[in-house]
Length: 368
Ligand code: XIL
Image 1 (tube, helix red, strand yellow):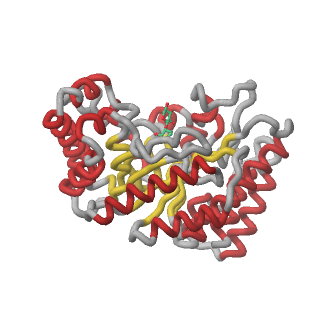
Image 2 (cartoon, helix red, strand yellow):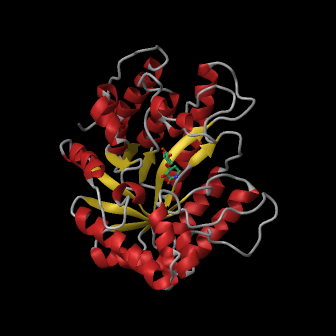
């Protein structure tokens, strides 16, 4: 499907308007097709169980997502729940679903302090040699099994420590205190990347993190910490290809296009690609009551963020889920709204219809 710019933009506008009518059928090209017209990639986090059990969900991914990332099926606790016992069934279900439709799957995440099973916490606490062996075994087995079908991995996820307060950045503790950091020191990060590269010289190896997007002193400090880490890795010739910016945005926090654009450029100046890996948008207190106004606020932020990322040179965008109904923004305690309302932070609404956020991203892609 090859659409010219104006046609794609018109289709984006039409479908956006339709989304305001409940149950309106999706028409026109999907988000990934509109992106592809400009050489961009659009995809979304997906769950194997839902692909198999909910036909509307599967149809939405088929329509919109050119790239898949497993929401939990590529995490340590799923792939290696007990030491030496690997289970690739759910990850494979996603990869196969994608292959049958010409959609690639990217990997998430080899090394992360969450989804790190209790046996692994205990094992790496036994000391550096054991910690290195556990990490090596996991990375080797996962990549040797998947490397022909998954070409792009978040190797280390969320390695940067959260700054303590919004106005009081501290120089100590810039890396997150994790079991692997305690066992191996800060070098666990580069060790993970080198182990991954050893398995395959051509995989895209990504450092993924959050809290980097907004125009707050806290995010400014987190950006500084990430840049320090990245520059050190690059200087030491660690095999790092890209930085993933999660982009779990919050409307209540200020966003500055030039600040974010320049951050993306600073990363690219280190010779790295920059991906948006987990975009979704949370509302906060004081948000309007009606859906139209709420969706417009979410869409405005989606537009500003997507445009700034494009200006900075991002070419790949993934949302963390696609449909509000199955978003972690709705299901995850601590992330879900406290007032009983449900977040509407993804391109498709509860009933799988395209909404204003979809149109905002489609227009940003079409105008790129
Ligand atoms: C989240 C999943 O969406 C949830 O279902 C799960 O309970 C916790 O993990 N950053 C990441 C993702 O890198 O792996 C997280 O996914 C969301 C935050």
